[in-house]
Image 1 (cartoon, rainbow, N blue to C red):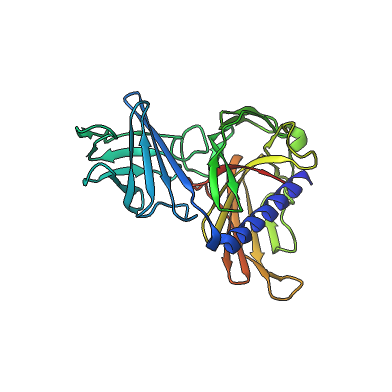
Image 2: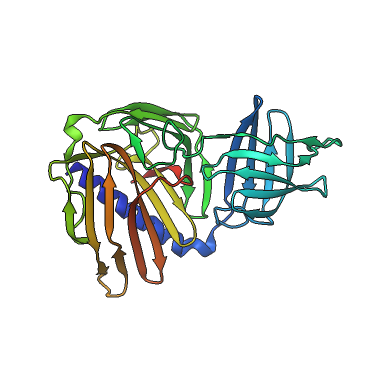
Length: 332
């Protein structure tokens, strides 16, 4: 029952986020994207300030690239896939930074003159991204199967739905989890590890809502599962009647994603047929797509994807581990 409550809470949260983003997409303010990496002991931090809430770089955005002692400022000339072309304010020459999907810098092409300097310097062609690619497990893999031990790391963010901006969280917090495990948020960085959940948290697989799917089939009725829930010990200035969570999310103007971590004690496959539900007004509808989820014994990543199409909210569910999700702190 606890797992079902948790899953339904996540579903409701993502649905609210999806509609919030869709309704507010025309009123979003600037977002700041941050990419980090290291090379030969030097840390590189690239921050791109967008002129809308797009969540991806685009020509005309501004940038700041910093090391421990130097700084370059300018504009984004263009961006395509993992390559972002930057033009410093003090030069007519551009250089390129390569990034991965988890906010990491993987390398540079070209040279630049740091602000206040006249001599161009070459940038490293190979950079180790921070956090590692994948951002979800100890091996840095983007596999949706994470093994018997789950290690979660990364920068924690806050999202302001009033103006569509993202802000890096910088405080220290104590993490609580009914499933066990240990970890904390230190200076805004999450580090949490868990092995097999406590036996009291393992339940039969019964978290799919009959109103959203039909013909649910579970290949092994003896399989048990646990859904990871990470809550934070509340601070004195936080409301007493709400809980503080962190989960992995992502959004753009018409799509929202959220991942949750599911442990199963044996291999199991779940299938079901999606349906369309209409709201009380007979206009708004939630459409769920068919599911075919094959879990491996251990920890798995389940990704919920919401697309908004006029008055229709379309939800799909798959086993995958998108690298562009961010850890987000929120109240519920």
